[in-house]
Image (cartoon, rainbow, N blue to C red; front, side, top):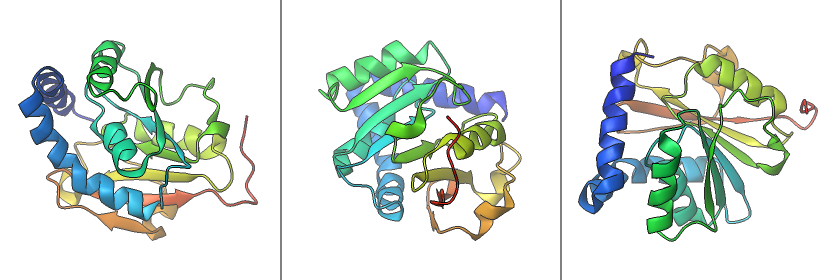
Length: 194
C-alpha cells in the first residue's frame, strides 16, 4: 500500500479524534458501509467482533457496536494510535463494549476462539499475510469480512489474491475508496489452528 494513503487517513482520523464536528462528518462516511456489512454478516448483540486495523479513530468498531450491540475488540499495529483511539472510545462512553489493543494482525498470540466475526480494514497491510493468518486460526463457523478497494484503486491498496474470495457473498459500497466487502465463512469441516 502506498504510504501517502496511510498518512492522509492518519491526518483525517487525528482531526476527527480531536474535533467533534470532524468526527461526526467522518463517521457518516462509514455509516452506510457498516450497516451493509452488519447485514451481510448477520451481526447481532451476541457477537464479539475483532476489527483488525482501527487507526486513531476506530469508526468501524464504534459503529458496529452502536448498530448491533456487539462487543468489539480493535487491534492496530501502530502504537501511536492506541492512546488516541482509547480516548475517543472513552469520550463516547463505550469502554465496556469497545476495547483497543496494540497488536499486529499477523500476531501468532491472538486467540481467535473468542471472536465470531473478524473484520479486515481496507488499509490492513500486508493484507495477504494477515488474511492467511486469520483464515487459518479463525474458528469454524466464524465470519470474516474483508474490505476490497474499488477496481481503479487496486494498485494503491494491499490486495488479497485469494481466488476463492471472488465467488463469496459480498456487498458493494458507494464510498470513494471501498468498493465492496466480501464475506468469508470458515466451514465446519475446517479446523482452526491454535
